[in-house]
Length: 307
Image (cartoon, rainbow, N blue to C red):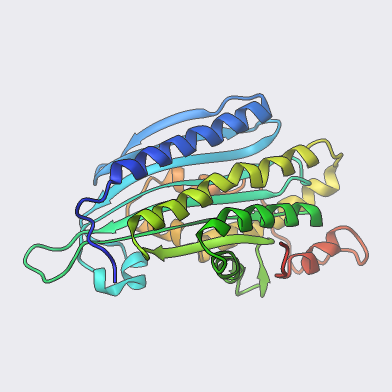
């Protein structure tokens, strides 16, 4: 059962999230030597946020690290379908969501999200306020580098280990299943961890686990950036990167719950669609040349025990 939100220190969650956004942007600016743009916004229906973004950078072709804290009076369809018992309630959601699309095809695209959701009890109804946490981080390479996948998963495993031995294998499997393109019968990347609807064993423990996931991002990803950023590439590699980015677009627009929730709840379209790559290609029935580096990607992406 979910706990009432009465007395829950939501200010502590907000402070953590805004601090996490700042730490990630600082690290990316230091690595890339270029500044992110800051775009603060308000939502007419309630709440607002701060989008930190870069486009056309030498390291990041597009990157967005977004904080939002939004409110509404009725759950949008994507959320009420997931939790139909909460239909008709007022709600509040806050989180940091991030997608990085590097320029060098040897540096993987990455996504991270940590969030908290609350649905308020309706006056006169025999019900309690409800909260839950969710989030995760995952890696989408264009060229296979097994040591990158191992490093990323070890960082995820170690971040969750203090909370119990079953969290990493469960959330790793959840990530593999969630980031799967059913119409392509293929995974989007090499996974990571993903979780949702976390409210047990209580607020403090759930909040601590969410913080562990958020704090894991920089040590999981930045060493990969430094390891791959100097690798040479040409038109062939960029062309394949654009082709594989098409899969990223397909997943976000067809399956991603966060994208659907944001658009259906009247969220800020510019921020929601900042997750899309700046350039993506689609080709009819394209197949990589047998034995080529591009042909190695599909078997590399199959779920396995990377850690």
